[in-house]
Image (cartoon, rainbow, N blue to C red; front, top):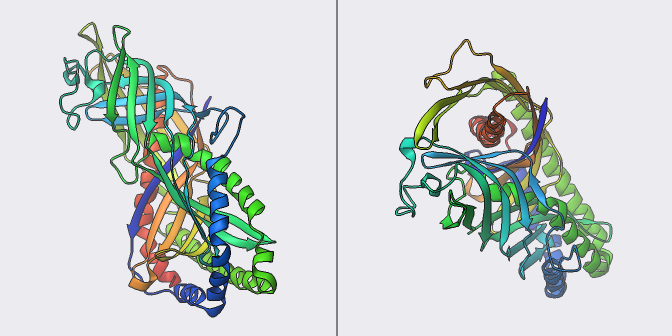
Length: 466
């Protein structure tokens, strides 16, 4: 058995209509209360100095003596990432985050009366290095040396680009922005749920061509065109946030913020009132999750079918088609959709909107299916071929729920995921089949979960009156 691990990360959003929820009224009343206004007023006298201290702490994160990095060790993408680039399927494998990013001087806004710490910063240039393989047909190869129309053509269609090789991807000008929920805890603040995203990233590809000369492609686009799709850069870099950046910010908050001293005799009152609000929103999220699980079990017992996936391409050796290949994934089933539970890391915040945000996970989300491989025959798969059975281990997929817009009577829900996942596959040849299975599941599982939640969230919200 081969055990492969990879990251799942997806970001997507949807909007649903529902009545203004009772919990929404409770949250608004809290943020408009006199005690919270007093909380905010007292904090304002200390706000600037604390934000400046946190700003410098983030900019000067040091994990070794030579430089200011987010992480000291290499971050690896354990299995393949399949990227469809125009007419070419590109399989990235054995990728490592080689050049670690540095944080620029961030913009930090700490508003504990609104339960939120927001951060914006620019990341330094970063490099990812690994192997690639191309699945392309001879008819899709462009016999030219440069890309004349980057919108219609791919760099991987050019004839001088090897079908397999080493690849370096430089990522620059990325902006990191997001927020962290904060809560009074002991004599300071505890950090909880966090939501960050990358934007404005630019990619430069560097590889060796068939003549072993360096080829560089500027302004390449590696971002998914699908809102529920995945970015290779996010897969590589997002773990650094939870493993490195967030703990360092928490340490800085403990170091520079003495909430008990700032708020004096009112500290206990503020803390207890905030705690009651977080408990109420946690109960509401639990009820929503219970509704989602109940609806799912009644609809399909937590099991849904996945569409078959077929990939066909020919192998071109010295401009002569040697063989045609067919890989098909079939009879795939996603099950465990009724196993959601809350991790209780979130709560209510107020930025430009009132929001309740929290994370949920699946305790037993899995995929099973069959893999057929046909090589050197016609472009169809043979039912008599011996299939390979594959199954995932538990998919540790995180779904972040954000309930917004209570004032406009249209709560919106954003869902994203980031966790490791492993799957088992019988020993097979060629090895690229393992890469294709991993890359396909990496892209399709979060999209399928997104599509499913889209259909049942309105009903779950209505049952809950959230």
